[in-house]
Image 1 (cartoon, rainbow, N blue to C red):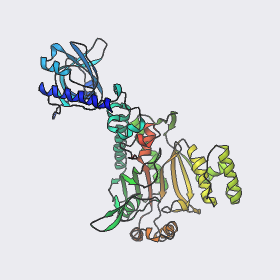
Image 2 (cartoon, rainbow, N blue to C red):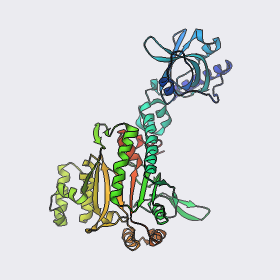
Image 3 (tube, rainbow, N blue to C red):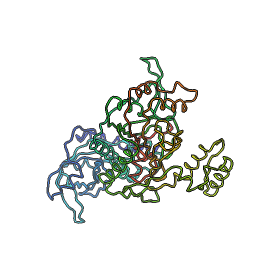
Image 4 (cartoon, rainbow, N blue to C red):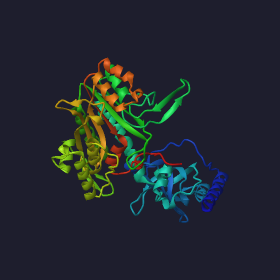
Length: 482
């Protein structure tokens, strides 16, 4: 801490010296051109105005060098004694790493072939009082990178470019859906009742109405109300909130895309996935073969994607007789498979085939689905808002889209029968019947067209397309313990 204070005192002294020379440490508007554009339109001797942060300073007597970064590119600036006024050259000595300056000069290529700006005039735009990370290599402490994202972005081109990529993914997602006739809508984030998923909400109090409110866990039930009202193709890109755990793939505040299409079904939603993701690969990433995670595993997003039933995956791993075995035999078989794969299935308290089978799927099957896969025909108990399969009412006409061992997106043939929907919600709610959204049921009773719907976790999608396997690397300001 003493060292940091020493640096700060030195910078305060240089700031005072700059003021005495006529350089105000915090300037105003400065018209300039992005460094990326300067490089793209480089012409020897051309006059330019640039602005950015100083990442490197080399003082060499009558000729000094800086590296400037403006977020679009890095560029060398040359400060020559015979090109600057006496005051401007003297004031250069008071510059520190991290300072933001504006500079006007001419383009020049050095003998080593490095494109540069020979500075004629410069001005202070912001004095940095804090010493940046050593040599601007970036923050070495990963947790510190998340807590002080501004320093991470300042010093880490890879991190900053990843967030530019995230913005482009959002933009191209919107463009793709608009091109297919969907319209973007906004539904309430502050709700009187959590619905659309089984999750614990964040609770608050609405003082003006003197009633308890929650942050939404999903926008689904409001979006379906819009289908009832005649808005046939809608999507929403926004935040959901779930008061649950934090790990490498979960953040309590996260971004979701939900899409609904009247007169569609599960297969309509599969078509959207097989169109949208290749579109994002082509327009944003530049390839459909993505290197994912530290192992650089190649994920191939060229459609069509595999389609396989949930039950078939279970039988592939556990044997064709799995669903006909008594529960105790299944339990022993699952324990043996867990030991065989060195996986803790956490079977304490599991009392029926349904939950045991899902534990097997969750821990032994899903994590091994590496390439894009639509897992279909799930047990109806898990998806109360979907229609059952016509040939087997114990299953629902849904998919879970799994890539890299994680679910990225569920998609349904939506339940539009209000009587069946009430039964499913009552079964899910158990004795907590107040959790049933009666207004939603009332909306269904007005008549909702047959519908397909899906929800994509945008954070996980960005993780996949940028090749990282931690959600905090794609969220600018992830939740952290104070």
